[in-house]
Image (tube, rainbow, N blue to C red; front, side):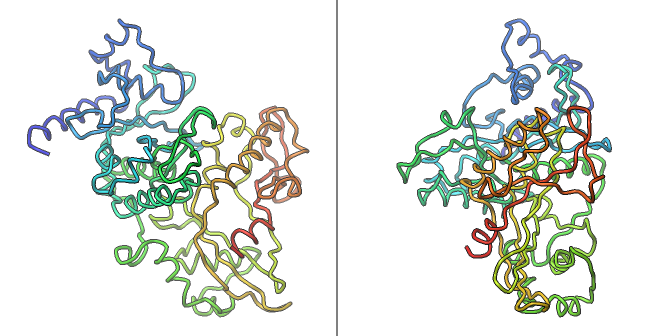
Length: 451
């Protein structure tokens, strides 16, 4: 970037920074007069604040151009909502959606000459507090800054981009899922399934229209890092060992390799770490990775929302337990859309599946296998049906007929509380036993263990 463009780049950022801690309405940009005078529609959907911000503050007209918003300055503009947690902290509400994927064009690109790199190398992020009761001019803007993903996370972003391209080139764009990748995802884009189907270059099968995005976990990380830099604090980030020498999957598998074939007791002795209880194997698995405390993690795990799950197989090769996720938040699920839901975020994560096997009755479990796994898009679509039914039942106050394991081949809902007194608030103003989504035992066996 030449010196003149650098000056213009800096001027745009300085102008944007005036919004921090304020609102668009209070800043009274000259462009807001134009929007008001012509009565331009800025939308009322999820993207409406971003459209309003572009027009009313920066004077950018809505367009479908493939170049960065401030071109010829290489700077893209993104408005991203924040949600307030119960403790008052703010965090990213959702993924950051980038450019629409043109399957044919992406198949012919390299990462270095890609449309993604050209458009999103530098992103001016405007983080605003989501409040459905406020009009766009009055929404609070918490943080403004520039994020350069290719300086921060180049190797993983490139690997994710190439993973998505590989599915397109193999003629399987219809099977692309957000769970395929770590930081850069491919989310669906379109109001309905029917209208979002498009052609792909190497197969006659229509595929869902998708857009590249920073996945929800990565969006939360970006916000946290930008917050720390604003406060001039050094983030306490722990990287995995040998990060530069191998990719994440190779690094994790290398950690487990010395313990394959050993009993859990032998592993405890080797780690000098002994623990009891129902979650013993889960604690051992996390200890092998390097987590010495319950809530400890690594940078790579946090930004990609990687989940570590243990599977116990008996001598007959069967697993006794289904796999649980977070409890269903009755009050929140009724206001969520599927792709913004807690369950969707979990199911589109990467999983490290740690498999222990018991050789005979009464014997200790042996570490049998470790693998990275993510759910296929076809199976995610099946889970959506169960989620929608669960949401419907909660909306109408029916807490006794959630989908059972016998009703769906992949996922079901059942109680998950400490006891019968462990309750959760409902949107009807009462309390009900805590419930949770579980992956079915047979599904885990067929799709994780055997496959």
